[in-house]
Length: 155
Picture 1 (cartoon, rainbow, N blue to C red):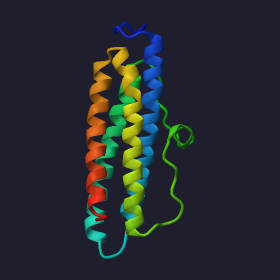
Picture 2: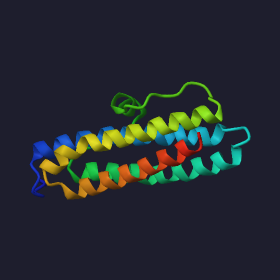
Picture 3: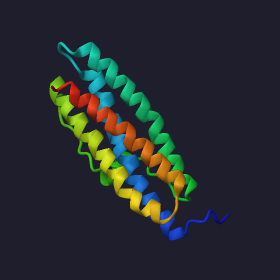
Picture 4: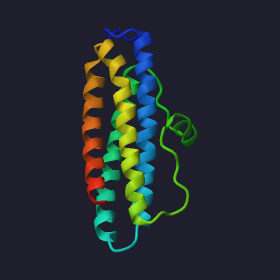
């Protein structure tokens, strides 16, 4: 059945593509954070292990919300590693970095997700797509706060 929600198909398609990039970035960040949770070691182990667990659990919920918004706009959500690798602005980390490097990678990845979300806002605003604007605002708020908390560990 055709979607008639007041947003043109062209705008819905462009927004869905932007959200697909956000989904790819979010899922890549989820994998990175989960990997670092499993493999962190050193004097900050307990703090980072628990912090990373909270972060990847939040991201697991977030990717579902983003994918469901793409579906609500009438388009398929990407869901494979290959699709995510093509769409994500976050590059895969090779090997097992030291704890301090993990934090630095996560700060950069959190900020990358924020930038991706922010880049979609002009189109969302133009289309008067308030539900997506709300989702993006919430995601940016959370990623900026998480980046701040991680950066604080480096001082």
